[in-house]
Image (cartoon, rainbow, N blue to C red; front, top):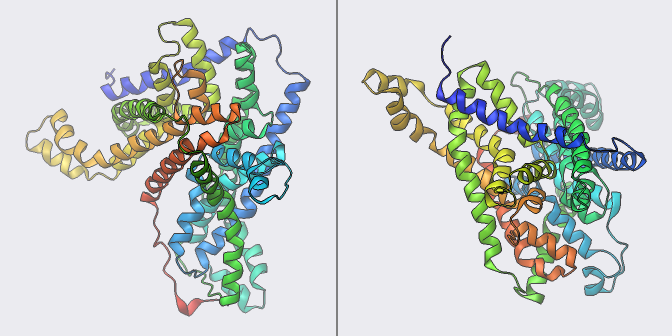
Length: 507
């Protein structure tokens, strides 16, 4: 039997480590006295309703925007695409915090204008927030499907007298259904695993109740709830895996040239989305900064965030290299890569619960920076693997073969040829891990060392204490970090993927 390579051995060890938190949850949940009761039923209903409303709202906003940004000739089209995709990179708990503080009878809007608005909370509030920060999933997936759609049949239907909207509904929509479904499932998965938004909105979903149980020292019940949450996560991931993209041969594209009135109507329709998802958080945090100044914010909070995130990013870059290599070598490596991706699907609150139990069994590890970095690594390592694997797949292997023919050993060829050529993917993967770890809230709340405040946890403490003005600096810093994440995401986006043909325009 041929011995495993070093990359396979590393992949096996990391895959086993990725599954360990799940096995811990099973062990811990065996001590729970309640498997499912009436309160669980209420929590389940809230969670499922939040998922359903989020998916439906994301479709209602994302699909029309995708049609506009794909087919309509807008001025500054790339600017609108970046602006409308921006909420995807921003953690929804920032929006939830500012909505919670702005509306209501004693909110910022009432204080500034005297206008009284009802409080923004509960299932309605959480659903609206989730829709504003997840519709880009549907927007981008639908736009990708529309970009590859051959519109010849739509033109034929128009020639035969069918109206434009009817032809889009009956001919284009069925062919992009998978793209819409894929985006909607990702939106619902985000709503399912998010902790901050339901917590700020006071809605009892699985993530919020798990945190409450943890604080009440009900670790076994928290583990039982975590397993129930993972069952739903697994079901959504299974459905997402079943959605297949459709490939059509290249053909004609639709192009709409709106007149001034139509253009004004389109931009007026997009304005409220930008206003509530982007402008409102920026404006509220800026007002707090102008009114309350820096408060008692300490730079150590930002340093703590950067320190833990940087350690996780560096570890991810080192470990992901052999893992990406193993995934390209054969089926066994690919299988182990899929296991490692389980960590990315585990919500942060669930990962935190499992690692807290491990820390309790190993006191030298409990509430240490090392355990927090491990949580970040298990959750976000797949981001680095994906980036490095993509860079490696695009590598011209003839250069490596040439180095080997010239006498270089396998290690020397990797060090002098493969590594420099894939370094861009390595750095991009590390940067993604760094940015995601900087924004992580629930795992940091559960696993951070005592007194170790980060930007995200400081924001949470401010919310609990009710001193909203103190959230200005961490809020603006997290928005800035989100903007950097968006720039990284758009690095792989092809903006010029549609060549418009004026001769085929439809009015």
